[in-house]
Image (cartoon, rainbow, N blue to C red; front, top):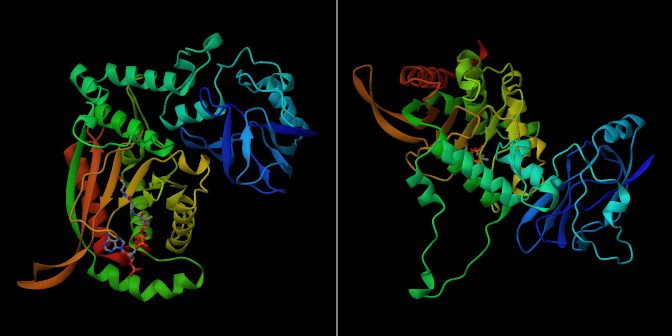
Length: 413
Ligand code: CAO
């Protein structure tokens, strides 16, 4: 059966937006919540998820169009089971007033308002998910308890407040001075990505007691191996970089040290161990920091990982990542080595317990076998959550990683 996807509420009091890009094509089979278009408003850029799954049979909008809340943007062929599922969990329809213009349908006419789900638009739900906030716990301040981005932020603030000192909070959300008294200023709203990064790093900084362990891995032999094997990986469309190698080594380390692959659940006083190894890779993009997730990294070969990271980084830079591709990481790698710097202290992501920071490898004098030798050393910094991981665990984990980097052929064993 055919079903229309209408543009849901984008943000509070925003009725129109500019269609930045269409993320899917006719013929694609998409899942519920998969991002389908990216919309820019004067407030932010955000991608819009589909409210149900199915096969796309028509796309009614083009990049560059001005589009309106309630407008039909795509038509999907939906299977019977999808419809049944939808009846069980009706889509929450925004209640913004929609001007009655040609081609635009009032969404309330499309489906009845849900009574069992908390009232929030898909973009607000996504925002909450990205911050790791359970939307069911957020108190909506809108009509009929409707939840907005600001409600999610207020909830996040309150959660942070519970676990931090009042002075921290006052500093984080304090009024800023009027800088125009000292010169010309230009106020720009934060992009969606900036807001998420700001809230999530603040959340992490105030709730996770972090320790950083530093090491230097001797990658002299590993770099020879990389140079030798590069062409082989190039031939199948990948790029054998240090990030791919670090991903492989970290995935093996997470299997060896399951605590680093776990999450802390303070509410229920438990540690959640995971039997899957999903690793986020920080990617620097013109829009800001994005962290796509490589799933089941422990089960993939170095070549497969080289191809996948290249593809994910490319998608990140071209704003093509789906929400799905950015969720569910257990551990993160942040490699600034291609850019520079001698060391840095990365921040652990919420719901993870460790992140590996990588700086630029350089030649250094090392005393070995009773003489100084020039060796290639890669600075590593492991930030970890001391609630779960003790200093000795951190030192062992890093020691293991460095040993494998120093003896690359042990990867085969
Ligand atoms: N030391 C020395 N050389 C390194 C290195 C390191 N730590 N890391 C990468 N290099 C090398 C690569 O091997 C590659 O060398 P060749 O051209 O000889 O093959 C070169 O530097 C360029 O690498 P790259 O950047 O193209 O690829 P990459 O896999 O190393 O990195 C990615 C990919 C996505 C991690 C990177 O592009 C990126 O975005 N880094 C920034 C991450 C970031 O912003 N972190 C901060 C997050 S917290 O604020």
